[in-house]
Length: 619
Image 1 (tube, one colour):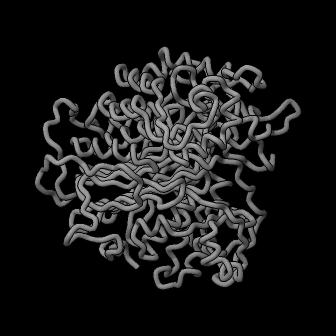
Image 2: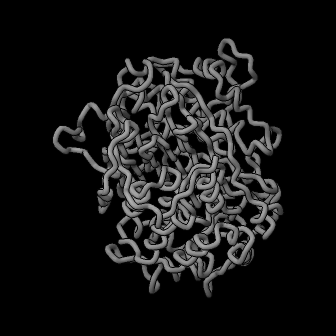
Image 3: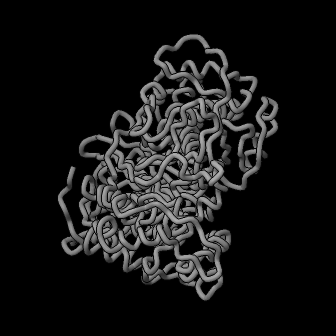
C-alpha cells in the first residue's frame, strides 16, 4: 500500500508525543546518540542497531516525521557506511514490516539470486569435487544479484512516506564526513586484510595508505556518497539497468585483482540477471505462542520456519514454571529437532516443494516433541521428522539428517518502531564478513558472496537436496527478522546477525523474554548457546560457566565460541513508552536509542524497573 509522500523541505515540526497512546507534538530534537548504549526507554519512536551513527540517522528521520519504513531504509543506508563488511547495496536481506493502519505483517524478499547461467555443478571443480570454501568466497562466482537497493525502493513504495532521495541524505552526509574508527572496525579489517589485498579497489578503500585504519581516526567513503547520490537522484534503476549495473557486471566477470595477486574465478552474473531482479512481497510465517502472534520470514529464509517450529515444540512445556536448566535443556533439544527439519526440507520454494504449513503445524510439533526426554539429551545429529499431515505416536528413529553447509557469521540487523506502532525488523547482509572481498571500482561498496550459501554438492545423491544452485534461485538463508503481536497490537520486533546461529539467537531471546520474564535488554544480554543439530552445542564462556555442568549431566556436550549473534530489538510498553535494546558487549556493543529518552528521569523507570518486563502471553 503506497503512503502519502512527505519531503524534508515540507516538514516544519518534529513529532514526538507519547507512543501509541498519543501526546502533544514537540519541537525538541531527538536525544543525541553519541555513544553505544544497550537500553533506551522513551517516546516518539525507537531504533536499535549495532552502530550509534546509524541509530542516530534513523532517529532523526523519526523525529522529522518519517515512519518506521522510512527510518529503516535510512538506517540501513547508514549501516552501509559504518558496517560495510556486513551490509550494503552490494548485498541483500529480508524486510519484515507491521503496518499499524492495516494490522498486517508483510515481508519483502530481498535475497540475492543466482545468475541464469549458474547450474547445480557451479561450485564443483574439474574433478567433480566441491571447491574449497575460501576459494569460492573470494571470487566472482560467489556473487549473487544484489537485492538491497530494490528492497529499499519496495519498502518505501509499499510502506513509507518519504522519497528514496530524502531517506538517503543522512547516509550521504555520513559517508562524506566519515565516522570514527573503533576497535571492532579495525579488528574486522585486520581479519580480512589478506582477502582485501587481493583486490586493488578494496585495498585502496579499506587499507588507506596500505595500512589498517587507526582506532580513533575518521574513515570517509566519498565513492559510496556518490553512489548514494546517484540512487537519490535517479532511483534504483541505474543499479539494475543503467551505468552502475554495467560496472557491477564487469566487476563480477573480471574481478579487479591487485598487482601480483593470484587470479580468482570469474563470476557468471550478466546484465539480464540485474534487469530481471525483483524483491517480491511474501506472506510471513505465523504461529501462536502462548497467546502471542509470532511472525517471521518464510522461505527462501529458513529463519521464520525454524524459529516457529521450535516454539511450537516448546509450547507443550510449562517453561515459565521451570528452573533455568530444564528450560535451556528443552530449548536446545527443540532447536536441534527444528534444524534437522530445516536442513531436510527448506529451500527456495520456487524450486522445491517446502512443506511449510506442516512444518508449522501443531500436530507436527507434537510428534517432534515426543522425542524430547527431560532427563537425557538426544543423540545428535538427529533425524528429520516426516511432515506428512498424519501424526500420532512417536515415530521410529531414522537416519540422521545431513548437517548444514558453511554460512557466514556476519550480517547486521536493525529494528525500528515509530510513534504510530509501525515496526520494521530488517536483517541485511553481504554474507561473510567482508563479503567476496571485491569492491566495485569507484563505487565504495563490497559485493556479496551470498551464493556460497548454496549447498555445493548433495551429501547423499539418493535424497533430495533443496539447496543446490540453479538458475535464478535464491540460496537458503537463516535470517530471522521477527515481529510479535498480541491480539493484533504491536509487542516487539527482534533480529540478529550470525549465520545459522541467527535462528538460535532469536529463539533463545524470545524464550528469555516470554518464558523467563527477562526484560528485552536482559534477554539480549543473557549468555547464549546454539544447538543446530550438531554433535556439540556452541556456547559462550559465560553460558558454560553458568549452566554447563548441569547440562553436561544430561548429555549435552559443548564447544566454546567467544560470542554468538549481535541482536537488536524494540518493545512497546504499557503507558505509551517504547524500549530499545541492543548488545552490551557482543560486536563491541550495540546502540539503542529513542526520540525522547525518559529512562532514569524522575517518576520514570530506571534500568532495573520491573515495568520494563511486563508479562507477555498466556502461561
